Image (cartoon, rainbow, N blue to C red):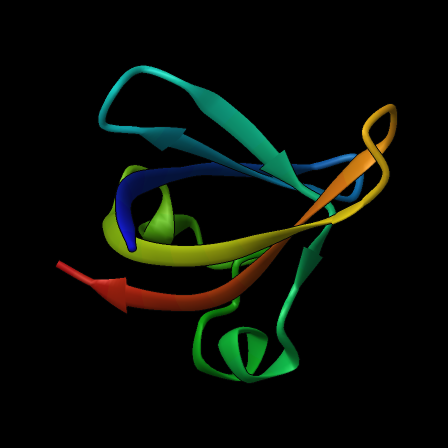
Length: 73
């Protein structure tokens, strides 16, 4: 798990900024997470810090990042 702040949902991507300054755009979020957090519409989640677990899928040239879990800090 890593710590990241949710920044936005734009153009089909969920954008998070990590504590080390990296920004990562996730194409997919586990449905369980989306049931718990309305990342597309709930503006109160912007800049909220989470413990995030994610996986990388796809290939080396076209990785797909998928959020597996979010836990508020």
